[in-house]
Length: 236
Image 1 (tube, rainbow, N blue to C red):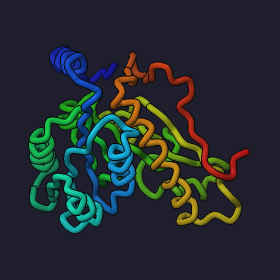
Image 2: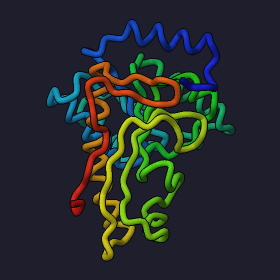
Image 3: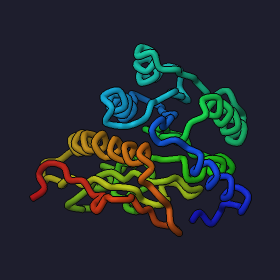
Image 4: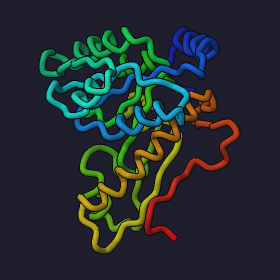
């Protein structure tokens, strides 16, 4: 499964999975900016498309717009500013403490712009999910849309995956694909990818809440789901 897990942590994860109630799935969402993916997930939960609830939104920046929106919706919010800590380890410990107050089934990274330590990732192994704006393993890191245009690829997209200690790596749950147009700029390409991100991340959260997602070895299986690839506009 996750080779960096100790036997002890793996057994705890299996016990937690057996006890979790997918009908009442609890999500904590981590953001750093506008939080548009977070908003889409919140709205899908409220529409009962997802059998779960966003119980808290946590940001590393006190001024991010997504945090203000979540508070206006009556969702619990918290700020753990990375600027208040003199090391990445100290920040991650404080972030974990804030997350654990809400006892989530899954922690969803939605535009959370921090590189997390191995200890933090291990703590939430199998429960920590991220969305990245590229078709991983292509274009990890930042400026993915410019990377795609510079490379000349004809398709681009997004990836939802379980987080491992390797940056922008980990078992893939689902991907979304858009065509790269000759007229595209980084901004126009980003806008089409973002629209698809809302669909893909929401669908993954629906699967998670329904208890359909399993990790076997280094691969993900989604029970009763044959296709985990989504297509945007301009693809024939």
